[in-house]
Image (cartoon, rainbow, N blue to C red):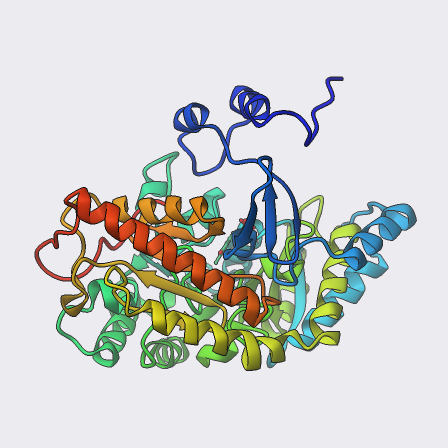
Length: 476
Ligand SMILES: *Cc1c(COP(=O)(O)O)cnc(C)c1O
């Protein structure tokens, strides 16, 4: 077997990567031409690439490495668990300690009577579980026609057939026959882009009321559930107006529609609470979890389910499950992650140290001529770029061009900031320190300055007619 190591020249690794490895959400031809950036190791909030650059990871990987990279305790727990019981399933009347302990711990952290966990390998799988679970629930209640699910445009719920259908990314729906039947999408509560002349509060209310209109159109007896991220992540860190979620809650209560809160990003401290539902005042019946559950040390996801649904589903056989549901190593590692979160008071750190420091730094960035505004909740944030912030204008050229330029300038300055269209997005490890946030701000400012110069020189600093940016553009 050929031995491929970190010590090989970057170009050789890039060539092998291009020859054999198909990347997600990537034009692989373009990648082959440019060569992938190859990450070789990571510690704390810093990545090291094959050229020896030390890159501050402002995205915690893909919103997941909440306790930071390279923790010894996590590796120890994984090694111990692999030797003790590397695998056993949870089908057919069997169980094991890591799955039992993790389910109990999650139940104790989750609000209200969200006391039961159905494990999956990822957020996508968990949302597929949710589709089948809510439909099965209503069927067992004698209402098999109560099966339609309402989601939002520009939502992200995963990439499998079910979860991709729940998601509202039209460029995903264009490929492979999505959405599956029975999924509907209302407009998102993105005031910056779509708010027009309304106040954020009036706009939030209007967007929530689209749910009521859709329920009435479909018939309340046909609607099983509404799904939403408390704060949209991959759509561009869209913090809804304060009026939005209370109105959604009122409508779902009124029409007996279940609420699925997709907590894959917001869960486990990202917004300063254990769950984004607590931050936004939502009372869900099911929460989707993944990412921060294990801080990305192992792949694991799940659905946290309320008493009523768990009892109902439990009275029959739920013909559903994954080989790796409750995988012992993943469960043990997730449990250790939750222990670290609690023993190190990471929520207190977010609320009292890191989030205030990030907010202060971002307030300064908001004055930058290229930055339209700042949206922030805990340790997730977005900076919509704009050629004219007073009118929330979008750029006259192709959506995402300036955002892409800015992301490239960030990389050139050893900073990971992603772009969604012309919005820069931020989601650092929760353990980031004020000193590291200063480094973040210095590099981000330099990247923005360089982008601004390039945009001006390239004649791209022109505003399009009307408000704001494109509602939706491919993941960046
Ligand atoms: C990432 C994400 C998912 C999908 O999780 P995977 O583990 O990638 O399958 C689902 N929902 C939200 C909100 C996400 O951000």
